[in-house]
Length: 365
Image 1 (cartoon, one colour):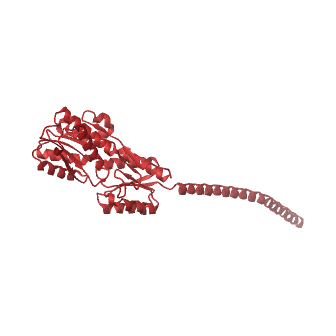
Image 2 (tube, rainbow, N blue to C red; image 1 turned 120 degrees about the horizontal axis):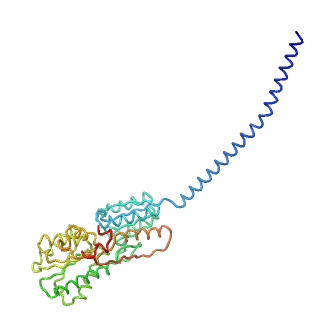
Image 3 (cartoon, rainbow, N blue to C red; image 1 turned 45 degrees about the vertical axis):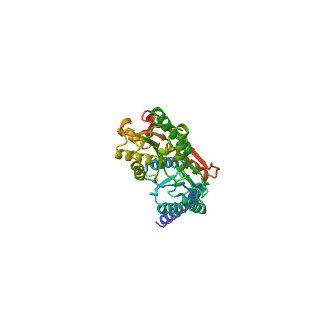
């Protein structure tokens, strides 16, 4: 009996030893696998950190593109179309575009400039409601290190020298185109020496980009129809809005009852449409001939009333999109440190109810 007990104890001891030996032999293998896994995880984490750091560095190097478009009369069709084109150009470059309507208010305008600077804008495209603020605007932007491009109306000093790159229409040449069209109309209808025919030019003498338009209209018309008595050429100054254009035109029309047939052109489309409404109110629209500047409101007249339903007979077409896209193109060049032209001008073609859809394409809709 004692012999069996001893034998059993010996067997249990040997089994325990064997189990211990197996455990101690497998433990190092498990440790090696864990270490390898931990090393691989560490390498993956390091690679992820490196990639993140590289991405962050690239982002910091390039920065987020944020462009402000600040327009003096942001509710007008011209600026809405221009802003849409500018927005599309900025978004195509991977950036964000903020459209701001300054409402023809200098205080609102300067507040918008300050907001753009406070929000770390990459650049600003702008049409100022008051060119006497040009130096203040340029100084603010320079001190903030933010490039600025003027659209339509230049940012300029008292001598008329541009303080920032400008993108707009070829003002004098476009004015000449309108003057030539009206001169041909006068010749074709034998109106040159008719004392009951008058020419009204809608002007905006306080806006530098508008003055050459009226000058071109006057110069080309008088050049081509020298027999037209200049005493029958009148001017009406307004602020660029349809309402003010209407009021200014109505005052001249009422003040000259001797004129029964009015020829009209002007500094922008709104002023010319204002004159159309004034002629309608005076009952003189049937024989009148108005030539607009922009065509973005003339096309509405033709679309809604037809060629015979309005005295708007033609308009110089130049797409707002060309100015919107062009201003952003110049601005992106500045942001990238490139040399850019100080002046970029867009030309125009005079359209009529007969060809405006063909010439203007989708802009005629």
